[in-house]
Image 1 (cartoon, rainbow, N blue to C red):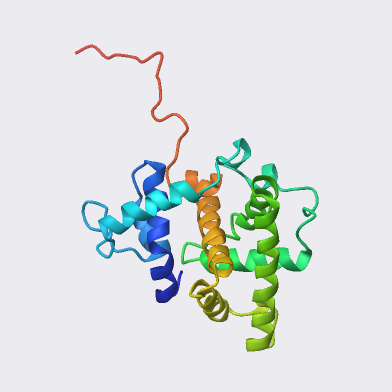
Image 2: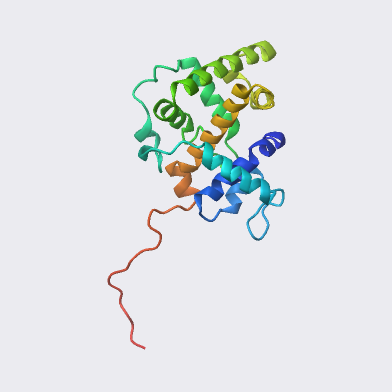
Length: 223
């Protein structure tokens, strides 16, 4: 579950992506994972409709188009045989910890790492983003690591959830567009990876590729 400050920070982006999917929201799942309070019409009480539309437009404009492998993906299908050249093992561990901070396991036991969103992110950043974005990711990973060691005396991946949240919130509030943009990018793609994983789609979102079922032969009882 998100801490209250973090859930407020990410709430609008999460709901915008649900809206972008164009499907009914299973409110009990959204409320459990993101602490949204649903009304009878499915719109959270705390959600401002105008801000939601604005966030939806921004999310649609900022997202890279998903490749074929990223739709209803599984870890076995997308995992790279080796780390891409632009990421080290330490940077990959930081990326995993960041995704776990955005969507930690809740009461239902399902978080970003449970569906291996970190593997999705590694593949996505390697395949779908330009070298300048990759270079900024590396810079921000290194800055996160340095800040964690300076503040808590531990690597970022070894910090507790509240400590990691504090570091990410501080980075999100930065006036540096590279730092704030890093948070927005990884947050957005973590949420998207989580929502497009096969496990979440089928077990929590009730997703079926072709809704309904055709019964070609049905016995009809005489009345």
